[in-house]
View 1: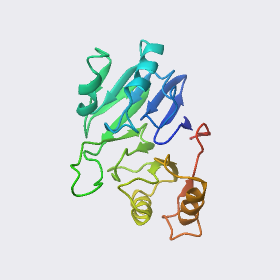
View 2: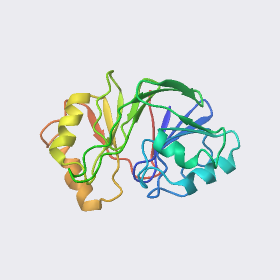
View 3: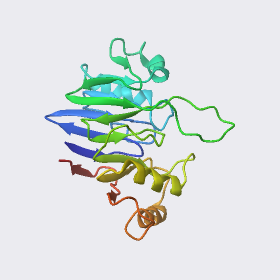
View 4: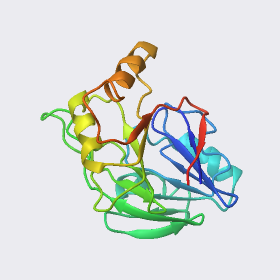
Length: 215
C-alpha cells in the first residue's frame, strides 16, 4: 500500500491500481480526491469535508463513491444520488478493494460551550487508522496511525498519551495545516527520541505530496 500525505487532514492510499482518499477538505489541494475510486469523510467540518472537492472527484470518475456519516451524507446524497453511503461505528465494508472498519462516534471537545458533533475514524486493511477529529483508540492494534498533530481541541500531552495508548509501529502527522516550520520543529522534538516518550514507535512528518510504501 502506498500512502501519500495531502494538505492538512487528507491522505491518499493506493493499492492494486485503486485509490482511496480520506478527508479532502477545504484546507487541502483542490484535486486531492481526483482519481479516487472511494472517498471516506470523518465528519462535517470544512477542513475535512468540502463539496467542491467531492464534485471534482465524482465528476472525474463516474464510478467513484463516498462513505461517510449521516450528517455529511444528508448534505450531499441528493447531489450524488446512489453514490453516497452512510456508515457508523462498528460497520465494516469494502471500498475500492480496501477493507474498512468504522471506529468512534463523537468529535473531541473543543470547548464545553460548543456542542459536540459526530465524528468517526476508519481502519483501512486492518493496518492504517485515521481517527478524524478525535483521539479514538480502536479496539484492535494498528500498524500506522494518522496522528492529529494540532487542533483547537488538543494539547501536546494528549497527543503523547494517545500515541502511548494506541502503540502503533509508526505515526504520520495529519491535521497540521495551521502550523508553521517552527511549530513542526518543536512538535517533532517532543514526539521524537528527545521528548517524553511515545511508546517506542516511529513518529514522522510527511510534507504534502510526500509518499511512503507501507508493508
